[in-house]
Amino acid sequence: MARPNRILKTARKLAIVILIFCTLVQLTSCGAGGSAKYIIPLYSADKRMDICAWEGPMVLMQSFFDEVAECGFNVLIPTPGGVDFGTNPDKATKYMDMAHEAGLKVIVADTKLVNSAFTGTHLHMPSDPSNTHYYIDHPAFYRFHVCDEPAYGTFEFVKRHCDAVKQYLPGKLPFVNINVQSQPGIFKEYMDVVGPDILSYDNYVLFENRKIRDTWFTDLETVAIAARDTGALTNNIIQAQKNKDGDHNGSGYADPGLYGLRWQIYTSMAYGFQSITYYSYCPTLLPMYGYEPFITSNGERTYVWYNAQKANLELLNFDHVFMNFNWIGASALEPKDSINYMLKFLKDSVPIKKIEGIKDVSVSRDVILGIFEDNENNKGFMLSNAASPFDELEAFVTVKFDKKYKGVQVYGKDDPVIIDLDKKNTAVIKLEPGEGKFIIPLVKGKK
Image (cartoon, rainbow, N blue to C red; front, side):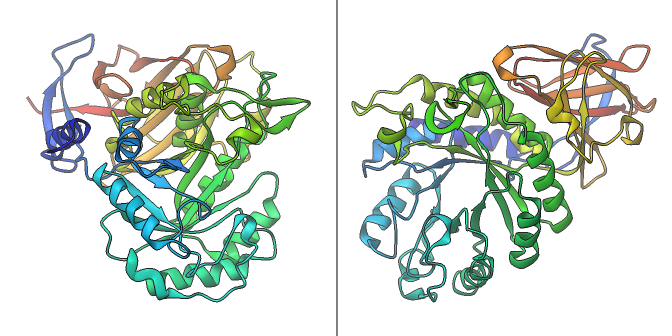
């Protein structure tokens, strides 16, 4: 019998997939004007964001996997220490079976094919494909986990093993997570040597003393530009819960809460990131570093689980639209009296006058405006409230569009709406703390 969460997902997908990609139709405005008709691009549900759980269920019970899917995740990233086709293929196969039953995909670890641990300490070992037959045709097999944060000096080995993955597992991309914080020279060498298909990194920045690590936006910009220029996919591993696995003048990592999760997700999306990973759903270092769990040892869901579910379901309300657009650049916007040093460090913020489709923008709080275009040259913009999530501030964004546009389609956590532009060709978009909205300017259709 089909599970309830899968029935809902299937019904939702069927409702959207009937929309032919970028079919042009005329619909009635839902905005203040109410009667103007616009040409509205519609998008199928074939392209979805990956919402990944690092270290998924540690116990092989189907209900645990179903619970991950119910939380809004669609990809699992088990570490080699927990699920490994190289050392225990029977356990790993059961893991894959349960993931598939729950509708989840898996980024597989096999230490025979790539003998690697954290920082790539065993990457010098040769590739042995003898166990790939266990998972190569499994329906849950999504990508292959090569290494987490390979150390400087191991990049040649990383490249060799990424090539081995492509050789022995055709069509499956190698996944490597790196550390880019304040290491521009090392990052450039990594790009030059490895030429990755996926650019994934982690940067945990929210501290209990309400401080934010100042590399958040510069790292987003660095990785986004490298991905845009090389065609690599992007994944950002975000801070999911309170823990002591870090230090900022004696302060550990804070509970991001719903606003902090939104802030990390939507500022990443403003830089074109197509995948988000939560660290960590079931962290192996939980007792040592005091990680707040998603699920207690008694099997009870915590506020961490519920905050993640809310953030994920908000995102899944419009991710299919976002994924049909290509990232061009981003503009960091501040109120006139604001000084945000994290934004001042950015080197490639796009001036408003150079953004096609927009004449001017003013903001009440710090905002990142992501600039996008789909394959039919429709413009799209991601508006992300970049003010500190600790301050719980709303942001109002006033956008003046080119004269040819008369309305704007707004996607976000709520149902999509159309706003008629006023006489000055402007629209005001409200963003809750940490919130992001994707907007598409519209031209009038023929009567």
